[in-house]
Length: 318
Image 1 (cartoon, rainbow, N blue to C red):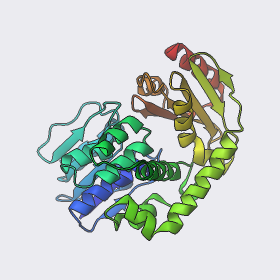
Image 2: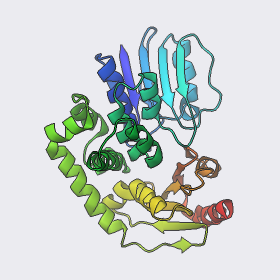
Image 3: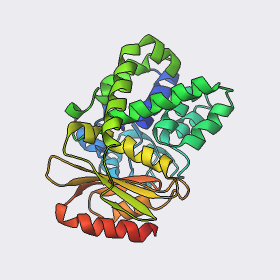
Image 4: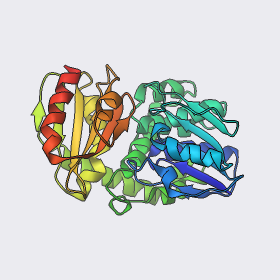
């Protein structure tokens, strides 16, 4: 049996699209909301099973990964988040690169020798790696309208992955993947499945309009912290709002905080675009925290720890 395990954001979805366009096969899809990263906990395997794992931290899944290898599974793992110690095993193949200028879809694009670069560009825009996306796009001589279309699609797919549960999203990530995977290029998807593109666009624009009315809870020369209300739209928009703020103020770090169903906080951190380091280090200092150098988060921050987080956040980037 084959399992495709992937992050429910633009990077995870577009990485899998590239791989399955190159090598079509029937598989069981395992995914979830963007913050649902310990996806290996969702399956059991048997000897000989094959797993493709995309865009989730190896470090956060290391226990199950080692269990599956010991049970005889074969695993192909591609990611750009914190990895920890990577096991050496004959049944494990990894492509891990934590450089802040890359993402899983760009790594897959390199692995496939550039067969489906438009999907990789879309994913890079979704991960707010605009410079990397533009550098790859320059090799294809895309015109400004085409480039803007890919940027918007990447943002919309990424936006769709955020929420506290699947019900918060416009589309479950596995459904969105299936709708997109039939198309060889993002442009074909937009023209062939325009209703889904339009729904994502409308949802994104409405939620962002609401977010931009929120004043910062805390602000200094180095950082700004925004606390969004306890609403579905706020949980959907928190990640792309963080990217928006990072692009608007590239010398400042940003934290976007939302309430979650456990009556504590969920935190998204964006390092300054002009200094894309430290977000993973900062967030990993808190239980349930992690991510990558440019963008990271804390899934559960107790209410009485908010002031501590804000102080450490400001100290870190000051």
